[in-house]
Length: 108
Image (cartoon, rainbow, N blue to C red):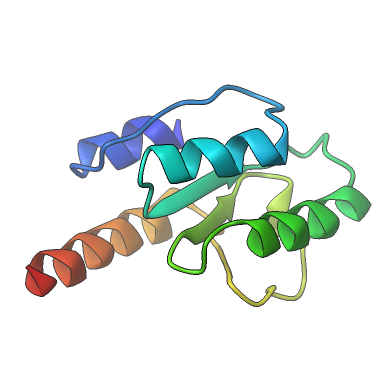
């Protein structure tokens, strides 16, 4: 669903599927020159697994690649993690992608 919403806002998206190993995600982000890696966690993902995943992903991705997360599983995460942007709904994500596009358009 997030992929469709981002695409409607003009973002180029690449769906890498579910449960991709984090190192493969890193390699795909680098090869695709991604600006953002967005993940969605379902409510079935144990909360104790989310923080280590995000910590490791943030550590292995280049600093210029933003990490955005959302989904029903992430809503229960209480504290934001450094270098990770958390969205509680699609409205926030739409505003963020519009802001991101404007900032990057202004840089050119």
